[in-house]
Length: 218
Ligand SMILES: [Fe+2]
Ligand SMILES: [Fe+2]
Image 1 (cartoon, rainbow, N blue to C red):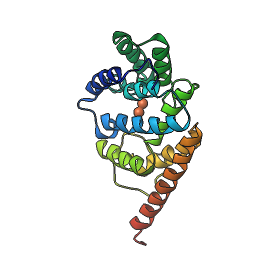
Image 2: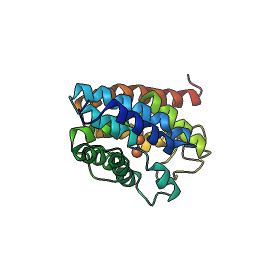
Image 3: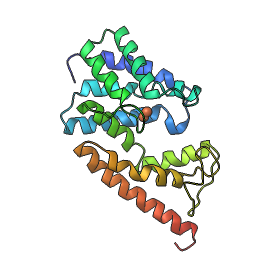
Image 4: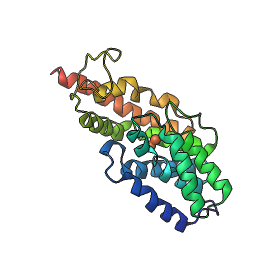
């Protein structure tokens, strides 16, 4: 861990970050942050990154999500999360270099909006966050989300251009076709790509099987 980031600081930040997730939906809750943290450390060790920066960035990366949900998507949670994280870390007396590195990683962790992640720690946070949306965890989260918006279980023949998110047609399979199936192409680190390839294989096999089971041929 970077000498500037003590275990005491990490545990205070963890406590504060968790409070932002009270009442969060299962598909985007505090457990996601825990999984992202573990992936960040796993990839960070392989890529020889600053684990202190990664710990703080992972714990704080989605604290802006509630704000984004309340603004109905008008506010970007990566941008607002970076500003919020900066204030929290300043209040805890964190050094300016670490604060800058953490805020930069949070600002660029999002799939679409925000800048592209440039520093090693920002790229690792980006990868860890995306890896949590594919594989077995990704499948589980996609169905959980579909349940949250009242979607159907499955429609093999879905036309993604003629259907909309947040509707009954917003199935896990739609999410796979629109987004999850492409995640592996966006991963930026060597270790991240290795994990993504494995997770993608499992996910593709799952949806292939789902198509065959719902056809009654398996
Ligand atoms: Fe996020
Ligand atoms: Fe996230």
